[in-house]
Amino acid sequence: VPEKGLLAEKCAHGSLEDPKSVAHHKLLHAASERVLSDARTILEENIQDQDVLLLIQKRAPSPLPRMADVSAEEKKKQEEKAPDRDAIFQATAALPSYNMDRAEVQTNVRDFQTELRKILVSLIEVAQKLLALNPDAVELFKKANAMLDEEEDGRVDEAALRQLTEMGFPESRATKALRLNRMSVPQAMEWLIEHAEDPTIDSPLPGQASPGGAEAAPDAASEAAGPSTQDEEPPDELTEIFKKIRRRREFRADARAVMSLMEMGFDEKEVMDALRVNNNQQNAACEWLLGDRKPSPEELDQGIDPNSPLFQAILDNPVVQLGLTNPKTLLAFEDMLDNPLNSTQWMNDPETGPVMLQISRTFQTLNRT
Image 1 (cartoon, rainbow, N blue to C red):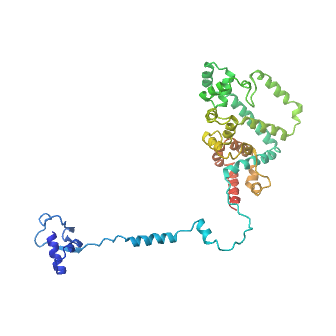
Image 2 (image 1 turned 180 degrees about the vertical axis):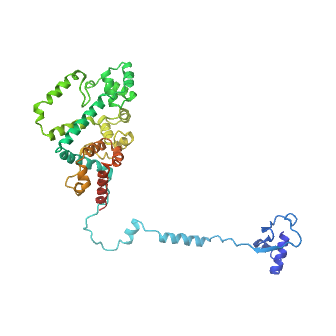
Image 3 (image 1 turned 180 degrees about the horizontal axis):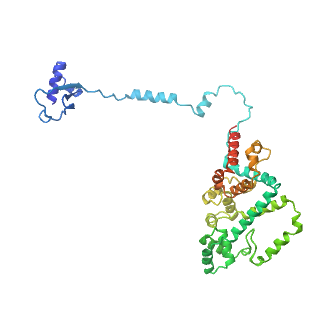
């Protein structure tokens, strides 16, 4: 095959002197449209008499860039690169300064989740004042509060309680430990061992009557419902209900997270504050303890400035105004304060979702401006 190529080269170019010239061409069998291999013979390629072979010039490969071209290209890239801060200061060092007395623009962007808690605290206060004027809302919250009481009284897991009592723990203490640790037997057992010498271990949880006073509770309730309380104004009744709901959702730290963080050397009060700020999430609490400890525990119950443009814009929204008169909105706000992860659930609710959407939109609009 190479010999045929040389002969074809001779016919085409009239010279066999340059043996490299054959490397720039290839032979093609016209009938089968296949390229003949230089490593094979005519017989191996099954070439017959009268077959037509085409001599075709190979496509020249692109030349490799020279070092000078590479250097020039890199230099061009460096010239087109945007200047950094130091380069700008160096280039403008000799220029006079203007507008140096202009106030610096605040560039930090507030986080919605951080501000949402403050907004909810302030909106809860407004909603309480509005709902206190509605007698139907008072009755509704009374029923809801009674249902929550019944739910708390009957939610102890009997199997878990039996495990603890069989270990020798008193039933009242075991019940309290299970309620504090969300029916987790291992965590309840750790809590009982840890608080065995605590003088307040036998005291009832907030909102629950002690075992000895269970029979006296109905009489006390009937006395409270006497003529003196019938003359009370609805705002007072509603305030007491709100206080009871708040007592029910008092923070309860995860016993295991408390022990783990205290083993790292942190003080118990610091650990409790960290877990409260970070909703019992151990890793986030650890980062809070090791960081700047923002927000502080005191800031959790602080509302937004009532005279701020953001809060005024939220209150001026008609959807928010209408939602604040709905008792379900107030319950949603209270639940989101206690369980921030439930915000998505309330955003999808047909009654509370539009209110939350308007709060978010108002915040985003004012935050950009």
